[in-house]
Amino acid sequence: MAMSQEQVQRLFEHLRSLDPEPKTELNYTTPFELLAAVMLSAQSTDVGVNKATAKLYPIANNPQAILDLGEDALKTYISTIGLYHSKAKHLIKTCNMLMELHNGQVPSTRKELEALPGVGRKTANVVLNILFNQPTIAVDTHIFRVGNRTGLAPGKTPLDVEKKLLKVIPQEFMMHAHHWLILHGRYTCIARKPKCHSCPINDCCQWPEKII
Image 1 (cartoon, one colour):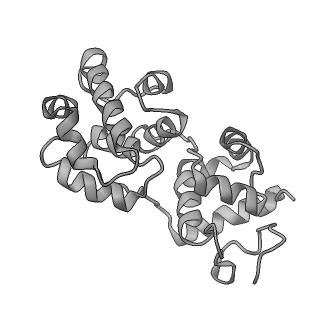
Image 2 (cartoon, one colour):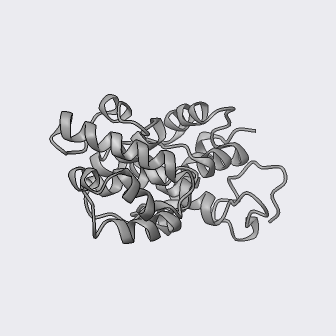
């Protein structure tokens, strides 16, 4: 059962009161470092990515430096991350495009971001939200689960959930909604044995199996 608009409002008021300025848990200091970290984070944990980039970024943290490092050497730095072979290949190709087309800078439009190898809609949404303050929602496994389980935005695909979230979330919460929902799914509304007893939004949740 879907939430009422009143429940949606209350849900985000709860999440905002607990964490008014939520941040990504990926470590970065420059736009390129964020883009690379998000690319590396696909099907990997932020903790795992942060461990790898802590070794990589002091050596190479911009497109030209990554290109100078080369694909084989890049792999040695990110080999602890899942799918590192394909991620290294994509990151090298992306660095080439950034140097050739964008003067080494991270582009600020969805079309330009999604044209980069290894950058899909989810990665583009993260970059647009964090770097360029656009009210986007990047639906990962956590947000997909929370959207469906709670009744906030039921959908069969990540794009379905994204479209519903953009429709139901009040404008005042849009800028931070992405992070609130990810963090809620990561630490409270977890896949197995969700922590319903300590959930700050359990009064809004429509999940029939919730335990309070």
